[in-house]
Amino acid sequence: MLNRLTDSLAFHGQALSLRAERQRLIASNIANADTPGYVARDMNFAQALKEATGSNQPARALTVSQAGHLAGSAGARIEPNLLYATPSQTNLDRNTVDMDRERANFVDNSVKVEATLRFINHDVRMMLDAIKGQ
Image (cartoon, rainbow, N blue to C red; front, top):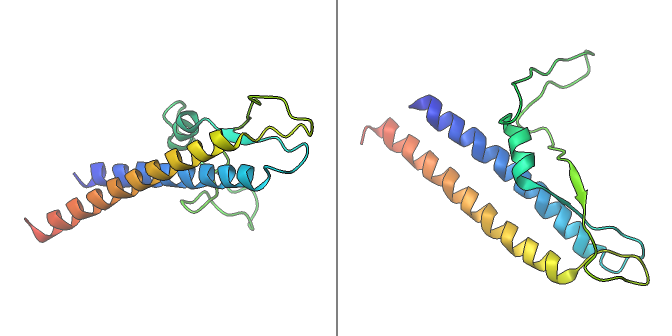
């Protein structure tokens, strides 16, 4: 049972890290809505989560090649494969930020962050109840 809880917390932790990275991308797009030539970025969340959790590839161990290098850790920044947003309409300044799409993505991602936090909270409560013996 402990392994299932640990695996669940690890999965939700990865999902939360990816959601935070996506929120940063969306916020960057919104902040650059008036920047000429700015190309909006986003990520394929499902694909990034598969890559982060190793679901679509065999597990690989990270190796340290130099003494000063940090080993792979839970706090390491996740760099998913970023995508370019396709413009819904042409702009004279070649900016591809669509504020309606960005606002919708921001709200959608925020709701999913909240859901992930609720899953983590549930897992922690379940673990505490198991420890208490109830």
